[in-house]
Image 1 (cartoon, rainbow, N blue to C red):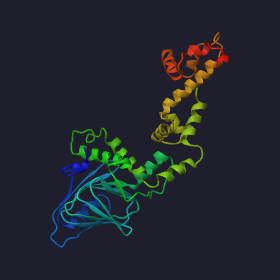
Image 2: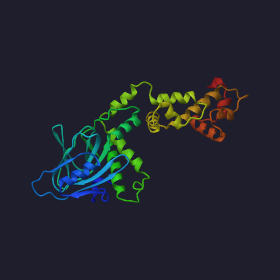
Image 3: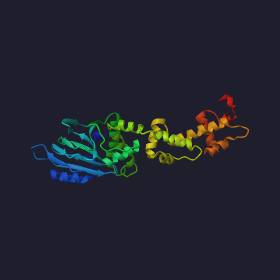
Image 4: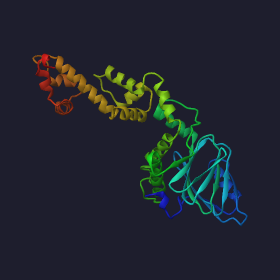
Length: 331
């Protein structure tokens, strides 16, 4: 479901404040995240404003509607904010330039940047507020290093194509499912994963991602190569994904990401492949009169001969017994 086509108020059951007084709005929002200043821009009497708020494990989400044109401002804050209009538009004042966002696009206000937004009358929007330390943890998870936290983001992001589509879809899922108490997200069964998708998508929208990736490559031996070296050095032992994560000093998620990106397979699939390669080398170099397939397979942790035969045939296109009995000169 596209959040930009919704005709109901986001997070309707998570009421934070309804008021015509900007002081009420300021106190409520400042209490949840950071000090905000609100001021109506029209001379006419302000209409009633509504703000809803729900706090998740990695972010705070707001549904916002100001009944009259309003300016929202803060000092620089240590958080990333994604501001997405569902109806109407919002103008951002950034470094002397004004940017307008309407449905299907949003603003990204990175850590260290102030909020300086003009809300048009009756604009309804979703705001996602993500603390800086969440981004720093995500950098560590995906790139295996640290950063200052002042990650740079583009001013605007299109939510209907490219990386922005991932941001829009994951945000749409959260907005939709939080309205239904029986949804898997509301019941906590998928909330962590969907939140991580949104935060990851936002991180990769950062202008600093190429530099972060380059920095990792300059640190010396890559995580992937360290993992492969560990596999080769312990090929005859049981190797778990946790062993590889511990040997490389990165999280399991980072390890899985590196293997999938570079090799198109997970860590354990690579472990099995390398064990099969070692088995093939041993079969090639063994005397069929004195060696058995089952013994060679067991030495590498394949104790089920039928399973070993099956995966070996799939990997190399022949039975292990054929490899063992072929004269060495034919390889």
